[in-house]
Length: 556
Image (cartoon, rainbow, N blue to C red; front, side):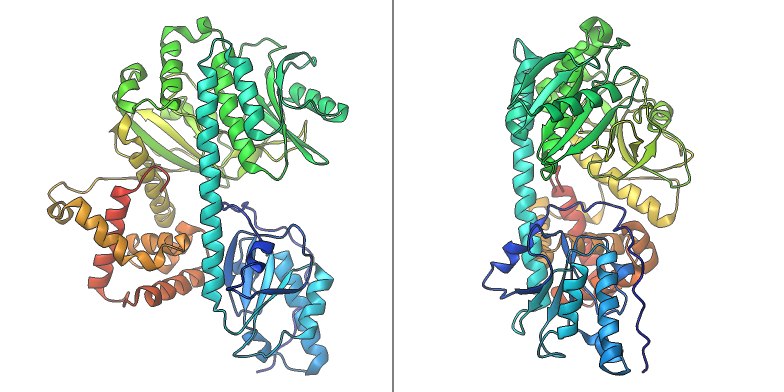
């Protein structure tokens, strides 16, 4: 079959959504002797892998999210005709398209098609700045993917441990006699940087950590003006070796000199800014006068601190004012101009926060993306706000994915411009499960293109109630053990089964191509050694997944 080489396209932006997984340094994979990988082209410093994708397509761009190591055995090279010149041009275009798609590296497998990596591909990767890794004949692509996911899981565990320790330290500091200063000091220790409460006129109301150079302090003063009274809720700036983030303290008065929290930390340390977001919430409670919050607000603040310090939800529930709560997950539709504030008002709650890692749309400078939602519900838990990717004085991203806590009894209806997933009302101690149920309902709403989907708990007299939960969970873990190393496969199976095996609706729910769904399901069938076309097999797998859902912790 004749093949006309693709011309090199103009550079395009990588995937719109930032990778949600911790990065795995390529040098760590190269250091693993069991894989035997060898880098033979492209840059060698600062290369980070977020996930792995295998494709033999001539144009892999539609199947990449950005941040992948793209693996290929070069099967698609057999389609190229026209001699060495045409093949060289094809490989140059292939490398250029891979870079344009945002891939972090290219892995080329030796055997069964090629004995060596084509020299023209090596030259093209050097030319386009694409790291090229030789995968030896004895290393299956699945081994590379498994190694990446193992490293991602370990990195995620380290991140979560760090965030948990930092949150406990901040909450403990918030309960001390001089809480603002104590929180600043705890924050500086955990982000390894400089923290300051800074008024728009440059007055410092407390600082901690190593004092930075004058250029950094001047940039911090400019950011404090951007998030001054009535300004944006947050803003960022970047200087060589330093990332600055400023947070308006919610609940402040209209005082034009109200201070903002400014944090200077390593730009390559995303968890630092999640920790800073938690500190901003606590400082908002600390710096807002008690009279402005009223007696109920003081009780709610006390409940928040007690929760962060490890109190059982049942112990603080009486302070929260409502025995039952509904969790709502909401995602903004592309065409909407509705704000988060309008959504909060429609739901009747002020407990609306961005979903961590959600990409945002932009709001004009000077507008608070989170708005001033009505204070109809108490503060229950800290969710760090997304850190906008903006320079001072520019547009501020508005989160496209939000979650809210709504007191039971409030009618939740479909909202213009939003897609909603709604849990059933639950007591405080069951909120983690309700959060998962709302997220699942949102995925189903996307798959069915419905404006709102509600989660319904199965009947207590259903088949699952006849089996002891411990036995069911043990069986489910054993059955699904081959998928433990690959969360995307487990998530794909869950969505695919819940949507009755629909390729299109599963692809829509997960935001991937339908061919990727087909590839993953085929891989799942191989790993489980099961016929996924068999209704009995599907029923057993769905039962296992539901058992794991019921036994999952808050992080699942």
